[in-house]
Image 1 (cartoon, rainbow, N blue to C red):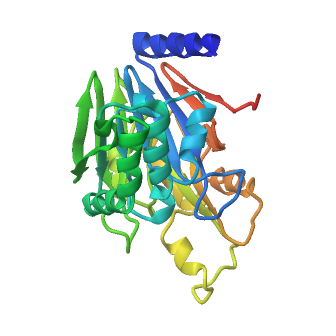
Image 2: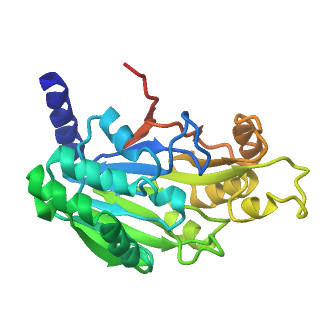
Length: 303
């Protein structure tokens, strides 16, 4: 355990010293409850800032797998309030608070409605919060949130890290956001859930890494199909290729992979690469990216 802790310290020092950003896909899935792909959640480490984007199913377990403690998280950012992006929040919050002994409120940024979400979660878990503070001696301040309901623009700036909220098109879910995270001349863009978005392209241009959602469906899917509305809320591989060609990222990755009718997942690459030839990978849970002068990709190896 001691050896693992020193490894984390050395990694953090390296990231801070060289202006690098590390991105870890905690969950790359959708509402489907499958073990291979947990709910949507992405961790971004830049210097001393440890930022979490969305809190889908199982995000706390994924954080535990990479030895990342809840009390070290600087802020949580929500892309939108669809349940698959927030259903892991009660566990992240309450179990994380108890186990990590967090002493300070967590900053949370999200769309209009985030304040009500937190208000009613606190009401729902009022008994647990009270008994943990009284019986387990958990720090009451560590159970609190500092809520910021956001609009497009710079919403977070600390220790050289800047987070920019980007309005995207996930109609009828409105507002919905993507994010651009900048640090020491490097950046990563997270699309959030969106259809093809010119606004996202505008804010993402020239980024080192873009992590984009995608929906894979049969070519024969018609507007009369009961699942067509799902496809209509997301981005097809062909549309993603158009986004990547406009953005010209150093690297592109797919996450939040909507797979209608069990298509071959490798078709994502095949269909995208008919129009886009840049570096591209299908994201997997716990896959990580190190962003510096180049972008390197590491797949998780279970131990």
